[in-house]
Amino acid sequence: MPSNDPLHGLTLEAILTRLVEEYGWAELGYRIRINCFLSDPTIKSSLKFLRKTPWARQKVEALYLDTFWE
Image (tube, rainbow, N blue to C red):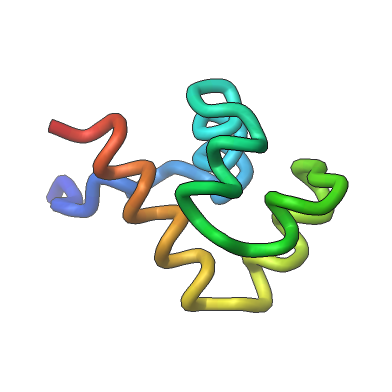
């Protein structure tokens, strides 16, 4: 049975990488005001933070859906 979740099968790393490619770190930090995007951002450090912080991860997933899901 297919999943109705548009994020099904996507890793957090894939989601974050695509958003960085689309917006860049500065714009991502503007859209989602979290320090891991504003202060010396890297994929690795951002993933570490997002995996520990459910509210921030939800914001990233919501932005991904708003940007790429129709």
